[in-house]
Length: 423
Image (cartoon, rainbow, N blue to C red; front, side, top):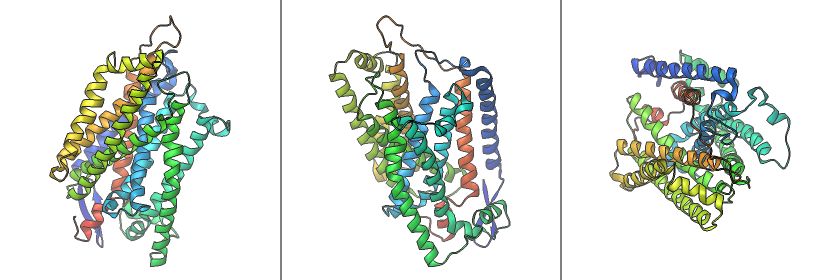
């Protein structure tokens, strides 16, 4: 993608070949996904590999994965806007945008999993005060609203400065800042104060209500001993920090490379140090979760753990979750200041693969286990409808990200380049 000056001191966007090819690829993937979703709508759940024994599959896996990405990216943004860690400020607005998009994609995934998608609104109209799911749905709506408002206030000064551009971005900025174009010191201080308040309110919402709440949905299921653990919601929150940080590193490096911008290695290495700390904590909690589960010697939980460690899921556990997703990234990230951008990109990408494997191992092995003696084990294999629709939804999320970073002032790197400071 190329950058051209379209206003005083402001880079505008032109449709270079990289820009067009990115959009074209994502639109093709979305079209394939839309076709698969159409098959899902017409055929119901009969077109999936789901059964009465394994009623949850890849859509639920991706749902909890993207909720974690959202919560993790948001919590990383609070380090900047609430706790004042300004060394990560370049990534702050991007973190809020990624968090918002990830939450939208997560809800699209769980929508596909509903037997009657047309009744999704019933989850808001009706509810039980003792239902974790009823509270969770309302927390999601409040969380999305909070993200949108905080992102607006984070971008507002830059949006005002872009109003004069004779471009689509300038017109969009003018529409978003109508009657909100005050750039006085008092107005800017008010913006920062609002962001601090929203960020502070969002911390318990993200931890207790969003991803911790998603973990609670599993933890309260007494019929599944593997899930029925008080540590499960904590694991979900910590793994969210891991995956959210890794995703931001991957997207930031990808975007800067595509746009030909200089990478801030100090920023990336700082994020790599955070990722290493979060990953170490996550691995420790996982170890104790497995250890205590095994020590309970409960037949159902023991059978689930056996299937993960030495059964049908052993290859993905040892190869992807532990080998590629943990051991190799720890070795790379432990190099610290010696890491190049390529090494950090690889480590973050492998961490995402590892967390994805964690999500698969949370959902599928316990559901394959027969709940009563004599019943068969569940055998679940995702169909093309599930894979292609999932790919289409992820392409939609990526399209929203690419468009957002192109047409909204969320790129701290651009501001630094305009001021002559590349870090």
